[in-house]
Structure formats: structure tokens, C-alpha cells
Length: 210
Ligand code: B1M
Image: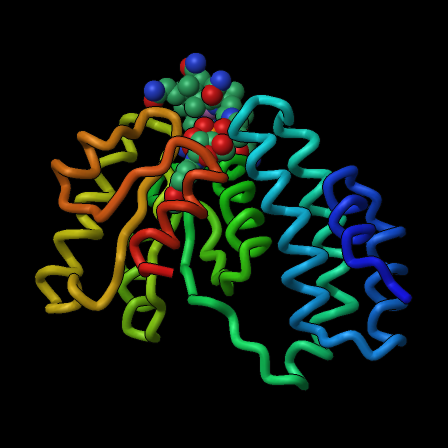
């Protein structure tokens, strides 16, 4: 009988091949896909998030763990879709216009996916209108990343455009990136700031009351 803790442990230690095999084994034993997701993959990524927050893990370990989680997700996804498991919420994330930094944004996206969110990754150098389009398509949160002080104002432009188009109350907005602060989030009217990838997951859950 599969031990789902083993999946979590192998996610934490970043063993992609083992995670893939263990997920397949659990599916072969007819364990519910949602149980494999919650008690194996997500449980593992939750611990990775805690370790990252406590500085027990650094960026390379998080990236390796995320890769292991992805390899498990590749095996699990078809069964999850078939069994009708829904993501806890949908998030569109991107690095704002003029900004090409994406390492932090990718980490945030991976941790959110690891926590059960569906991610629409809009990429880098994303013009405000693209975020607005994503809101029109019915996502619950937009996540804005910026690493340059010169690109931070694009975040305000996005908030203002959403207000102008009457869409501001349809979506929660989280901002992050090295030069960002809670004060800036308050100043531009975003819903929250997260200093790191694990906190972004906490903030998203807090804002949606999950
Ligand atoms: Co750039 N760069 N860079 N760079 N770069 C910085 C940011 C800089 C601080 C370096 C410096 O001068 N000391 C400086 C910015 C100064 C400023 O404006 N304050 C800078 C500059 C000036 C530039 C260029 C202008 C250089 C030039 O060409 N003259 C240029 C700009 C290009 C552009 O974007 N238009 C440039 C280019 C580049 C590279 C392309 C070479 C490369 C990016 C590669 C890539 O991302 N694919 C690069 C890099 C690597 C850096 C540094 C060295 C590292 C950034 C990084 O990846 N950190 C950086 C210096 C530094 O930070 N030490 C620097 C690791 C990453 C995990 O952290 O992104 O902060 P971070 O993400 C964290 C949190 O911030 C948070 O969670 C993440 C994980 O914990 N977070 C969020 C991030 N997004 C979030 C979103 C959220 C929530 C949390 O919610 C949605």
C-alpha cells in the first residue's frame, strides 16, 4: 500500500523520478487523485514553503522541489481532470511591463501551483491591458511582480485601469518583488504585498478567505 508521506518526502528532497513513480504507484492502487495531490504533492510543497520562509531552504532547493512536484503533477493531471477536482482558485501572474526579471515570479507561481491554485503565467514584460484581459476572463487574483524601481509604476497603472473599467472589485491584487513594500501596495490600492513566495501563498489564501 502506497505511503503518501513518501511522495511528500521525495518532493521535499527534490527527487523527481521517485515522485513520478510513487504517484503512478498510488494511482495504480486506486488511491483518489485528490488524496494524492493533497497528502502527497501539496503536503510536500507546504513544507518546502515553510523551510524557505525559515531560511532552512534556499532558492535552488525550492526550484528542485518544484521540479519534482511538476513531474508528479504530469502523471496526476489526467486523473485529476477526469475526477473533476477543481483548483482552489485561478491566478494570473506576470512580471510587469518593461521588466524582464522572472526568477522570483516563477518561484511564486510554482509555490502557488503547489498549494492547489491554477496558474495563468502571463510571462515577463506584460502590458497592463493583458492583466485586464485576464480579469475579464474570470480569474480571482492577479499577481504582479517587479524587480526594478522604474517598472513599479506599471502596477499603479494596472490598478487604475481596472478601476476605470469597473473591474477593480472583481479581483484581488497581490504585488511582490525586491523593491516592493506593503506601503507601496497601500499607496497604489493593491490588496496585498508578499515579501517571498511562501508568503504569497498565505496572502492569496487570506485574501480569498480559503
Ligand atoms: Co537585474 N537588477 N537588471 N537582471 N537583477 C536587479 C533587480 C538589481 C537590484 C541589481 C543591482 O543593481 N543591484 C537592479 C535593480 C535596481 C533597481 O531598480 N532597484 C537590476 C538592474 C538595474 C537590471 C538592469 C537594468 C541592468 C542593465 O541592463 N543595466 C536590467 C534590466 C532588464 C529589464 O528587466 N528590463 C537587468 C537585467 C537582469 C538579467 C536579465 C541579467 C537578470 C534577470 C534574469 C531573469 O530573471 N530571468 C537579472 C538578475 C538575475 C538580477 C539580480 C542579480 C537577481 C534577481 C533575482 O532573480 N533574485 C538582481 C539583484 C538582486 O536581487 N540581488 C537584479 C532572486 C529572486 C528569487 O528574488 O526576484 O526578489 P526576487 O523574488 C523573490 C521576492 O522578491 C518575491 O518572491 C521571490 C521569492 O522569494 N517576489 C514576489 C517576487 N515577485 C513576487 C510576486 C509576488 C509576491 C512575491 O506576488 C505576485
